[in-house]
Image 1 (spheres, rainbow over the protein chains, first blue to last red):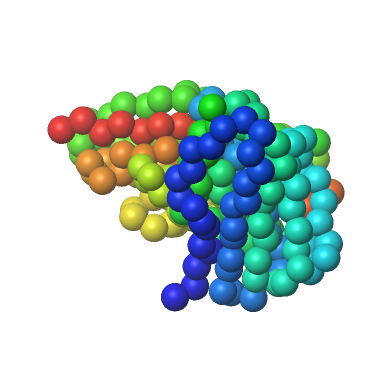
Image 2: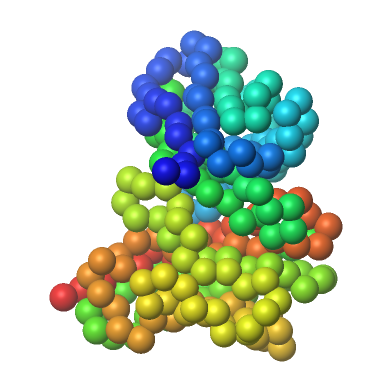
Length: 113
Length: 113
């Protein structure tokens, strides 16, 4: 089954404790992206990647890192999480460089206390 | 720069009534337009998309949307609401000089019996 998977689905952590949210897709897509969803703000792009070893900042990259060492994986790293990073995070992938139609993972709900 | 405006953060309808969710876009070039749906505790799922073919686009679950260039709109409709349609709906735009999807802030649809 074609899908984007994320782990963990739920995470509660404390300020400053480094964490990684994994994302994997099995569709051989080149384009992958991370979003955060906050009430009233819709989805905002954090980082994206056009291909292996090619990443770039989205609209809200501060406090986040990403890497793309393999085509299928695109982990999101929070080196020192803060409460304002409490949010719902989505990973997505796409093989369409014209429309950027995307397939979304199930989401990771992160709470930073 | 492209942008998307969804009018009404909450829409309530009775079961069997017409559903109309509004989306207006701002784009200097012909856009690609999407509607995504997010059911509770799930990721986003593509409902339908406009990619410069027919202006009336049919999607899944009986939804459709019409691209109106003169009004810069891409409103989502369904003739008869069902309880299972209760979800959050996002309009998104891409194309031109942007290499990403730009999302609206979402509209939560409630369906009452």
